[in-house]
Image (cartoon, rainbow, N blue to C red; front, side, top):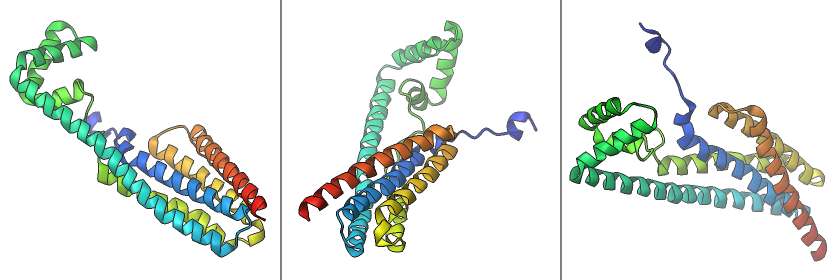
Length: 234
């Protein structure tokens, strides 16, 4: 067995389709739900009112994330299909031009003219549409838009993220509800940043710092607004 077959490479870029949606969903679930809870709690609302607001935020947010991801990724998929259809027509109507186009692409990557022309010819004979989609349009199966996958990943992870601050609301004393939700949510964001970095093969520090900073900012702003309006109403 050769070294290549004995040690197959595994690239984390193959996870982009679901990882982006999953991290976005979980982050939004934690931050938006915790921010809403902190804002309502800061306005001196009762535990039951805070809990109702949090549960409403969970369901509304999960459905919004699913719908938003599905619509946006579907738009990307539609664009990709349109490009494929246009390229298919061009390959049928002007194959010589398409061959030259592919040759120049390979030349621009450092291949000499004769070799580039030969490779382009062989690629055109094997699977011209896939060759042009990959090398001309930058489209591949690994990075193809998958609307349903993105919608499910976003909704599921949003729900999981939103459950964390809701659990704190049910367990923490009312007198320390705001700091308890804030601390618990920040801890969850640290874990999320670490998991996202590990799954994506990225550096741990920047990923954790990024999610915790924006989470703290969102909760601080909503707590301030909640306290302001709570004081005015009182």
